[in-house]
Image (cartoon, rainbow, N blue to C red; front, side, top):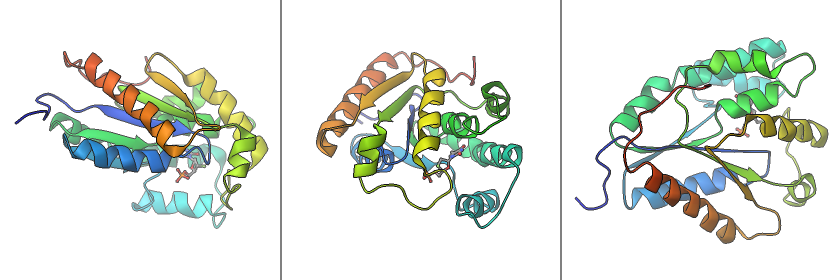
Length: 213
Ligand code: FDM
């Protein structure tokens, strides 16, 4: 059966600020991986669940929630999907995830009075990704790409604080891909290169470990 994986699939997470191109590259990666393996797409927040609908209302400004409460809902939204996620990986499917616990911490901790340490706690124990693809975009470039939409966090100064928080979450599973002044295809080629490298390093099938060490 050729290139099909025999062990667990890879957990590949995409992170980055708004307008970094995460969703575009996630979608393309899933379809290209599916030509050679089995791959599945997930995204957080998953707005289709009951909890996800509350998050959606919050992001659209239709609902007010305490900063701690919305943080815990974002985390709950991941925990309600963790069985599905683990099952897919154990069945040998790669899973490509558009935002994960790192967004949870980077965004919530950008608010006054919310510490990184407090924010990390509810996501402790989630499966740790094999690769975090961080798509970096400068605020200037993000503006040029059509500016920000109307959702709650889509403001320049807030995004700058989020970007700083990401710096504190990076470890050796992260690959930073600069997207400024590059075409979609150029960025995608870099994404594919780091995914291929991760596949090589996962050839001896390291088991899943929990966040955060
Ligand atoms: N976001 C996303 C959070 O604040 N916490 C989280 O845990 C997650 C997963 O939700 F502004 C924020 C990030 C973004 C918003 O994300 C919606 P999408 O990717 O634009 O749907």
